[in-house]
Amino acid sequence: VQLQASGGGLVQLGGSLRLSCGVEGNFFSINHMGWYRQPPGKQRELVASITSDGVTNYAESVKGRFFVSKGVSVNIVNLQMDNLKPEDTAAYYCNAEVRVGDKAFPEDYWGQGTQVTVSS
Image 1 (cartoon, rainbow, N blue to C red):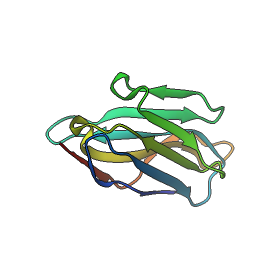
Image 2 (tube, one colour):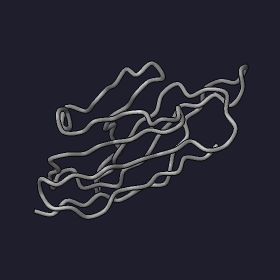
Image 3 (cartoon, helix red, strand yellow):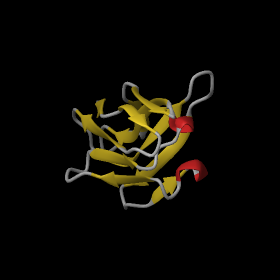
Image 4 (cartoon, rainbow, N blue to C red):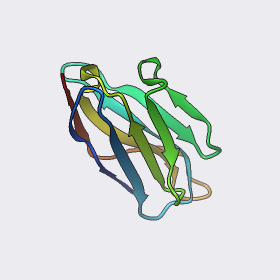
């Protein structure tokens, strides 16, 4: 199982970006998917997540500005980021809790980080 993320880049204050991530490989089910971020010199933190039932969860700092959704395929998660601020600058990581078989325990998988930089 691999997670492949895309999107990110450089944007000005108030701009928008969209991140996408797909789970590739053989798996039985995905419990939830989401995005974390790690600003320079700080710990990684949850940004947003979505369960297989569509229940979402957001960090307080992004509520009303970021929107997480599943793609047409169940193995894709998107993060629409609007009204971006300099404090959103970070490396963003896709995460998924995946069961590779019907008798397997769920495990966390991570994508490669994608950089988001917001200039003022």
